[in-house]
Image 1 (cartoon, helix red, strand yellow):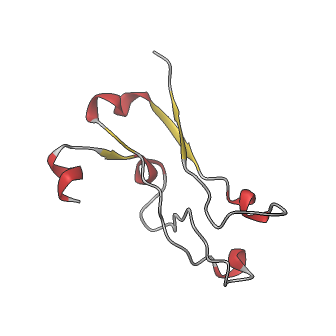
Image 2 (tube, helix red, strand yellow):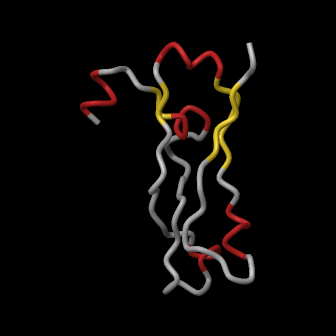
Length: 84
């Protein structure tokens, strides 16, 4: 947190997803009904510098990947940037 604040990095996940909303990128294999319980961890963080903030257009973490036939327990975050 100190590094993020000292360098004024923007947490892209929380720029687009309210802090009161769960934001996970990992769900344990031990939890068979991972969608119902929605307990996980946020392993992915994409921070950008202040000068890039105006180019941020959105963030995606497609949880449907967890439902694939042989899924990972992890789903990556991806950001969308505006072309200027």
